[in-house]
Image (cartoon, rainbow, N blue to C red; front, side):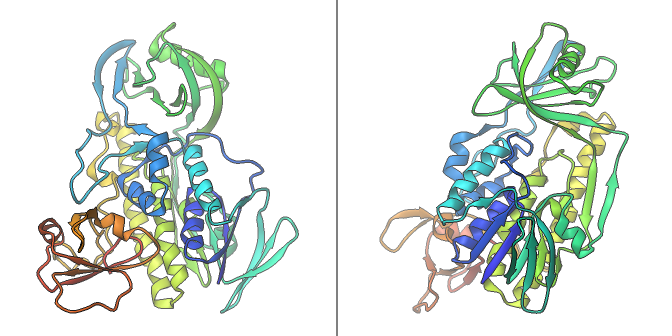
Length: 445
């Protein structure tokens, strides 16, 4: 089998790793001529951290990132309080990474590219897909380099303006709010303590202002400010002076910026035949809630093992599972965006539903505490040799895992975990003799 992935952002890279570690021949192309260098999607949610542990990149993500900073809230130039987007939560046996983690997107992408290279796969920059056709058995793609190739599957992870989605004729339904425009980017700010984040709000409207969030690996902040006039460093300095007061911070090293407007869209379908779309090609989010990058990574984590499996009944579940989830997540992001527009201070906070730990593919009619389609929780266990380990350690890898609780017969499944640990019994609501199959993406089969 061979797969072509168009788009080498976090979604395409995650999918590339998922396929390559299963021995699937994969090519990953991107029309950009150089790698993205900016923070953009800098918040990694707990479920993404769990996926990254499975992919073998979590150690680097944790080493290079930082926790969510305390925000110092200033209104009219005066410090009026401190708050976090979410209060930190202690890990539990079933949820080892309960808190979001901050890491600039370009650094996340570099970590994923390095992992992909371990499988002998490199991103092909300056290479765009310019056309494709498909039959019942293959996809033939034309590249900007003049090459024509035939693959078993094509995946468009090529962003909100996706060529693959447009070529398929898939409607991208939703709204764009032209009344709100923001400037996002990365800048250093002398005079501010880099351990903290800052909100500088207007006295007349405390929810109007500029946000500065510290980025790991240097002295830069990611900023979000009204798109008001000049987008240069000098223009941004004028905005800081306006909201924070002159002399509060001296900006320098503006290395990345982009104009942004609320854009909420969902593709009418995520698949046509042997061609799939994922990430921003399938759904675009406002930055409120920190859901966009994370939802794309989860798309890829869901799709990778299904492409490797290849059975139609398995492939058909990709759109069913992921489009339903994307629709739900878009609602969360849109609700937070509306709160911001309405001046509701709770827009600065993040709820449980942004962590993506509650994503489930279960049948709504199934009311059991833990059911098929739910996330398989972690648990400490003791193996047959008396060694203490975790279920997530045993799940790691491209395989499915059969959990057996106090079994009395041998197993023929190649990846079997026999469990007697009381904690795992409680977490899984299990009884002696129960068997639970865990999918390669960590959901109950």
